[in-house]
Image 1: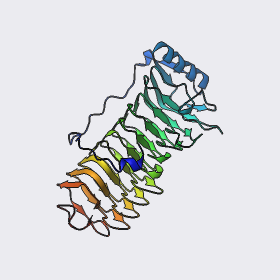
Image 2: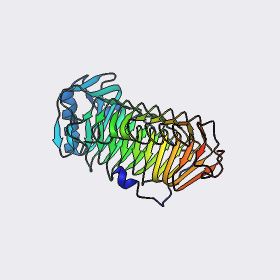
Image 3: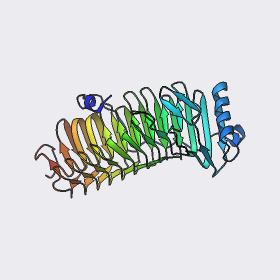
Image 4: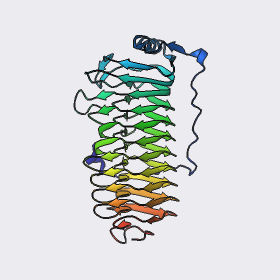
Length: 358
């Protein structure tokens, strides 16, 4: 799904979610007695254990606490590019309190790819330095999932993709769930932190998406699939050319329960959020301190439906109009959500957002 195509599509379905958000599951990982311990820094042993888990269909691997596992060469190369670890085809769990898997190589490769039939669960692991940049349009700098990805109390940081999803790319038909996980300092063409493709699914409970950069859309998150954020901080992300400094959403539903979208920057529209055809629902969410070079400092609504319940839109800035909210087309519904203290105005064009002090 391209951004151009997405702008032409509108979605009629509504994703229901409660204001209380989603309970964060326990994130301790399997009991230590059920895990295979990998010696500190032993990459060959880590690769061997993943391969064994793939072969047997499942496996639980424990990294030595606080240790760094440095990948210097790609282990596999397939149609989606090169990977530092074996492609995950079984049900693989990797636990490691404060352990890091990182790339240190002149050759670009992402850290991990999850195949359509595979499942990867991370507990307390940092994934860093991945580089899916060997060819234009390569996705998933840190992790590309075509199957199931779960990250608990983990960090996805300093990864890059020439295509979408600098930190994580969720492919069509794939699912990702992040619990108390930080996605920070990643970069891509679209979805600097995370990218969700059509028919992909993302759930984020707690944690944060911060300091990511997209060349075009969705500095923190670009989603075309079904996405739910619960009590998550989306802040200090940016786009270098186009829309959605914090979040870009199109076609698929996006629900944000609680949390905040703050201090993000877009060169063009939607410093905080851009909606180009989604059913967007924000409940109890703070949209604050975002900046757009053109219109819609807090929210730029380009189509679909945006419903804001019991939150606030304040202190945002637009270089054009709609410091708080800019409605180009579609429906914007404000219920118990004050829009005030934005510059140069609160909502634009005048009279298009019912209930907004212009």
